[in-house]
Image (cartoon, rainbow, N blue to C red; front, side):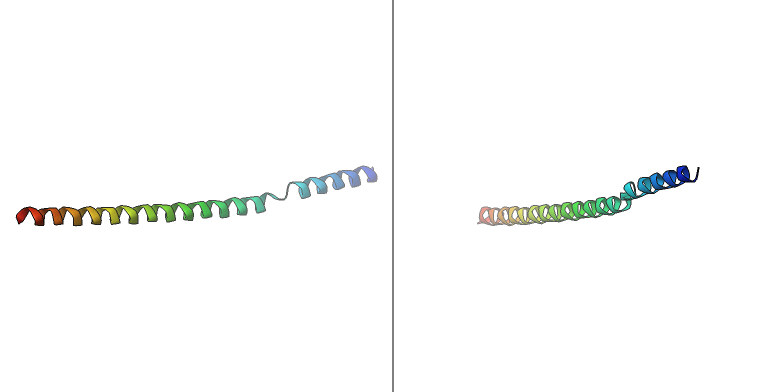
Length: 71
């Protein structure tokens, strides 16, 4: 009977050790998610800067066309 308890305890320890890595996986998933979020924010910021520059260029072109029309 003592051997049976020892075997059950040993099997239980192996089960706990083999299933214990989930905390590291959660941390890695969280870091990957944060990295993706920061990359997305960077790309959105670049897009908005590009749109603002295009809008400014269009406004300048429209102003120059209006100035020429007045002449």
